[in-house]
Image 1 (cartoon, one colour):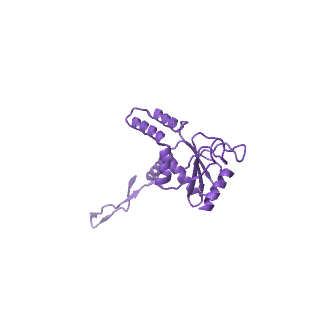
Image 2 (image 1 turned 45 degrees about the vertical axis):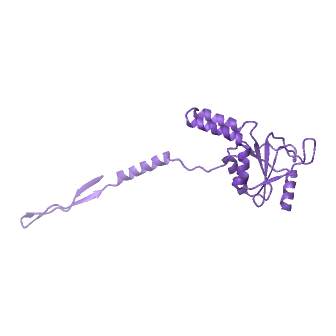
Image 3 (image 1 turned 180 degrees about the vertical axis):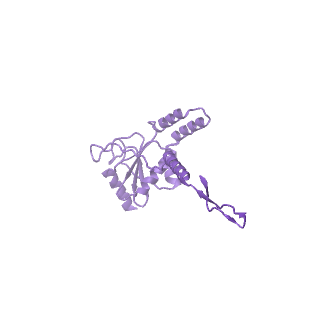
Length: 211
């Protein structure tokens, strides 16, 4: 608040009365109190930025080092050096047997016409179902809780592929993040990080060494 302080009285000189001089002094105490109140308000109501994290699912380790549990509709990605992505579908078979021929690796890359196109094709049915739910939700036909529950159910459907991500010691963290980003972009609901098996590593080493 401002105060008017009178100072310097004026006497009479030559029969004339001189006007008294006035000085202005501003008391900043209330302003400081207000500043602290505002600071306290913003500190208590502000939302501090939280560190971004990525959720990964890790299954229980197998009882045997080279034992891979069968996964229905499983697709396994094997990442190696030079941004290379190898993959196979279904259960891994180290040799020809009654269940089928020996597993052969195919290769993808991180371009939209390769990995993204492949994921889109494999998740076409589920993505169509999720798209229909989004349209109904946007039209107000589904409440938020029902919409979220149905989307989770579609992603977790037993007929939806489960993607396994494995790396050798030459793959980079960037490649892991990139492939997970592509899975999320394609609304993939089931993917896990798994240790690579020795038999799988042998195939990858053979591919990398011969190309």
